[in-house]
Length: 509
Image (cartoon, rainbow, N blue to C red; front, side, top):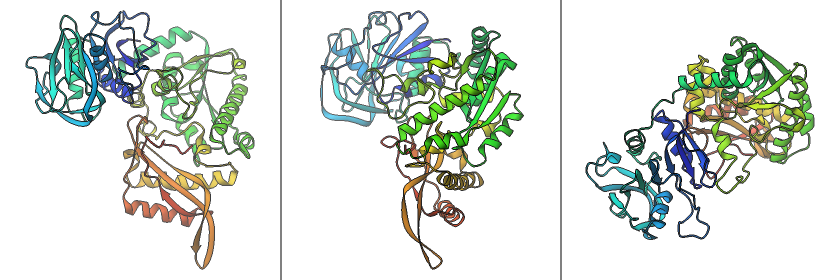
C-alpha cells in the first residue's frame, strides 16, 4: 500500500477527521499513535501532528521522538503539535487569557506564503485550546493571526515545518481543506494518486500474491463492508472464495431470505446457514449488553467453524474490517477504553487455525462505498444503512426472547420501509428501533393496556464516528407511530431519540 502521509495521533477527537480530509485530496495517509512511530519512514512524503486534550506544560504531556522527522521531511503541526514545537524549541506556551474555543477569523495573513494560497483575509477557522503560543520557537516566522491569537500560524526558517493553532480539518474552518492541499500538494509535493480504481488494482494484486491458490472463507452479513470485501476477493481468487451467511435469529424481518436472493445475481459462492434457534437458546435469560455481544461472537465462531470444516483445506478467513475499527482498537495511551467490543478486531480463537485477510482495513466507510461502486455493486446494496454485528440483540434492552425479537422486527420493518417510501432513507446514515425494558399504560378502544415502549433512532453521519439525530418530518413521525401502535401487537407507545454522538452512542447497548 502506498503510504505518502503519516499522521501522528496525540489523542485528539479530530484526528480521524484529518485523515478523512487528506483522503478527500486523493492522498493516502495512515494514523499512528505518537508513541509508536514506524521505524521505516522512507515511503512517507509528509507528516502531520494532531491536536491533543493534553497541555504541553503538563507532566503527562505526550513527548514524541521527532528526530527522524523534524527538518528532514515536510511537517505540519496542528494545535497541540504547534504548541509542542514552540514549547520545546525556544518559544513560550502559556495559559490563554481568554478561552480560545470556537469560531475565529484570520485578521492577518503574511503575503506570498504558499500555505495560505487562495485563502482570503477574514477566513473563518476553528480554535480548540486553553494554552496559546506567546513566543515563536527559534527560527519561527509568523504567518497568520486572529483578533485574540497573535501566533495563529507560523513556519520555521530553514525547514519545511509549518504549524497552526487552529483545526483545518473541521467543517467550521472554511478554507481548511485548501490549506491542507497547499501544504501537501504545493509544499510537500505529495502525489494525488489514491483513487477507488487504484485501490482495487492494488488490493486485488496484493490478495492474489498473498493467497495464491489457497481457499478463503468469509462471513457475509448482508452489509456494505462484507459485501465489498467479498466482491474484491472474488475478483482476486474467484472460485476459491467460500462465503457463509449465518442467520443468528436477530436479523431484520425477512433479511435472511432477501439477502441470499441479492447475492444470487452477484456471482458469489454463498451458503446460507439458519442457526437462529441455537443463538436464541444461548442468549436466553442474559441481559448484560457486553455478555450478549460475547455470546453472539462465540456462537458465530462456533457455527462458522462447523461450516468451514465442510470445506477442505481452508487456510484464510476474510473479514470486512474497516479503518475506524482498527483505529478505535488502539489509542495513544495503549488499548482504548472499551465502549463496546468490536466484532472484527482482536483476532481469532486458537482452535480455528486460520490466517486473517482484511482487504478493507485501511478504508473509511464512505471509501468502501466508492470502491464498491467502482466494482459495479448495485447502488441499493451500497446504500444500505450500517447494521450492528450482534443484530437486534443490542436493540432489545434486557433479556432476549423470540416474542421480543418478533415485536422489534415488525416495528423496525414499518420504520425502515416508511423511510424508503417517503424518500428519507438515503438522507439518513443509520436508523432502527429499540425495544425498551419498560411497559406503559395506554388505552385501546375502551380497554386499558399495559404494553411495550419502543424508541425510534435515526442519525446523520459521514462515518459513524460522530452523529447527529435527524429532524424527521412531524407528519412522517405521526404516521409511523400510528402504524406501529395499530399493527404491532404488544406496543402501545413510540418515542424518538434526539441524542447526538457524542455524548450518546448510536446504539443503546
